[in-house]
Amino acid sequence: MKSKVRFITRKWVPTLGGMETYCVRLCDKLEEHCDLEVIALPGRSKALMPSGPQLCWFGLTTSWKLVTLPAVDVTHVGDVASWPFAFIAKVRNRKGQVVISAHGSDITYASKAGLLPKLYGAYLALGASTVGSAIIVSNSAWLADQVRNYGFENVSVIPLGTDIQHSSVRGTGTHNGSILFAGRMIKSKGLSFFLDEVLPCLPKETIVRVAGAATDHTEALALQHPAVKFLGSLEPPELYDEYAKAMCVVVPSQSSEGFGLVAAEAACAGGVVVASAHSGLMEVCSGGIGFLAQADVPSDWANVIQKIRHWSSKERLMHTQVSTELACQRYNWSVVAKNTFTVYET
Image 1: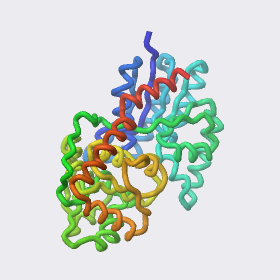
Image 2: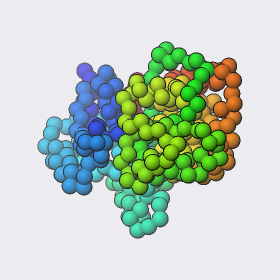
Image 3: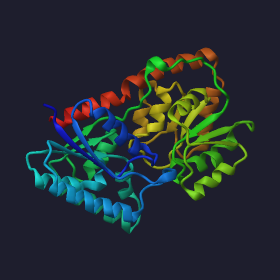
């Protein structure tokens, strides 16, 4: 008889982002292992996150459901900031397993300067003391250390996955000469930094293709740069094709990343990845999967990119054949679901 699992998340489509992708794809695969019930707050149209009132209402209604619905074997809460749901589930059913997923954005905010981040850090510490028996699923070893700093002790590391299969990737050793940036356009993701600081260090004819949703007004102004070709939000097959065709895919995050799903996706699709040398991105690109550059050093980015630009077709193909196979083996949603279900049975 299959275990009954209740998955709770405030991160869901149509909002676009690593946390949303994680929740949707994990749930798709978990259905193969268990009897799954999902309680999710959908995002708004145009890839916008839920509003404050929507989040408050979701919190109230979900808390009521946890009190009134039949108990389940496992309650999986989709992010650490939502730990009160785990507390309610544990009080309701002390024999049930409680699991909480940890992501970079809902942990690293507490390390920023200011009163609100400090209060949030205290809130996380309160969660650790309240639901200390919960298993925390972290997507990188770096993030696991951050989680432990707030008092959570039972932490398992399960990297994220992609839908790309190695058998579907056909490397050619060629590229379109452009650089690709994919993902959310917010300041911390580094698009403006790359265009303002790195691009002047590269040949004048360099084109930067940008794929994603322009949800931040200030960062969206970067799309007016003459070297930018804005592609908008792409369907997965189109995005994977862009990864493979680009001279390189840059992930110039200027703040810590728990994982860095774009880097994993691009490598699995046959792309050449250059990412910031910090936090979880270093793990994603390890073992020959990608290249690293000092996050805030333009010349370091330019040197790595120029090296890739001058590769022969043979050199490029040799790199992508190895990196793609490694990435597809390591970052696979079926493996993520299997390992997560193993945690449920702990």
